[in-house]
Image 1 (tube, helix red, strand yellow):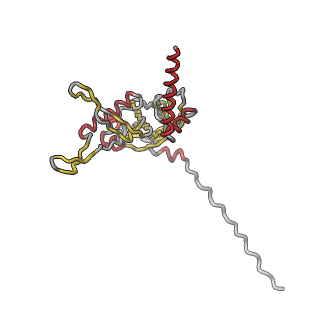
Image 2 (spheres, rainbow, N blue to C red):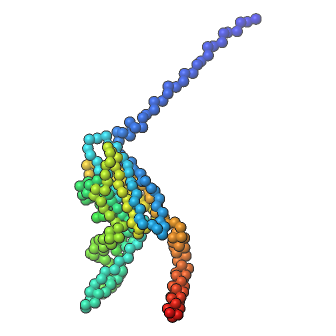
Image 3 (spheres, rainbow, N blue to C red):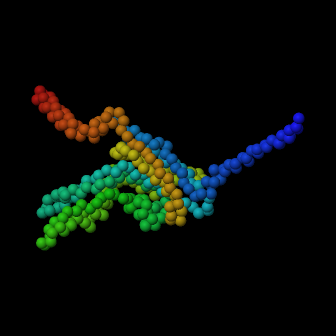
Length: 274
C-alpha cells in the first residue's frame, strides 16, 4: 500500500484587532458648538390658561479662550395683521383704508447674553433676521395700476414711503400685547458653559407650532446653531369650538347669529315681565 502524504497543517485565522473606539467626548470637545433643549415642548391652552413660562437650557462647548455669546430667537406661527391709520380731515377724524400685512409672526422673542448690537454688526443681524429691528414680515406693498396725466398702466403703491412706519406700528402693537419682546440679558450662564433662558407666553399667545433658534456667536460671527420646536394647542371644549369654527365657518357664523337672536329675545322677555 502506498503511503499517503501527511496532512497539511491547519491554518488558524487570526482574529482582527479590536477597533479603537473614539471617545465622543474628546471628539466633540474640540469643536466650538452649542446644544439646547426645552423643559416643555407642548403647551395646552384651556379656559383657565393664564400664560406659560418655559425654560430653554443648554450648553456651550468652547475649546478656545475666546468668549462666545448666545442668542435665542423664538418665533410663533405667522398670521395676517390688519391696520388702519386715523387721520383728521376738516376737523373730523377718519380711518384710512386698511393695510393688510401677511405673514407677521404671532409671537416673537429674542434673548441674548448682551445687547445684539454688541454681539454682531447690523449687516450680520439683518442677514439672519435676528432682532425686532431685523424682523422679517411678509408685507408686500399693495399696488394698483391707474391712468395718470394720460399715461396708462401707471403702478401706484398705497404704502410707498410710509412702509416702515406701518411696519413699526405692527411691532409696537404686538409689544403692547406682550407678544413681541427683546431681553438683552435674558440668557444667563449658570455654570461653566451651561446657560438658561426663559420663554414667557402670554394668555393671548396664538396656537400652532413655534420655532426656536439658538445661535452661538464668536467675534461677531455665527459659529453654531440649533433649532427646537414648541407646540401650543387648545384642549377641551375650546379645541372643539376652534376646530368647528375653522372647519365650518359658514355654519359657525349662522349658529352664532341664531344664538345672539335667541339671547336677545330671551332678555327682552325677562325685562318685559319685570
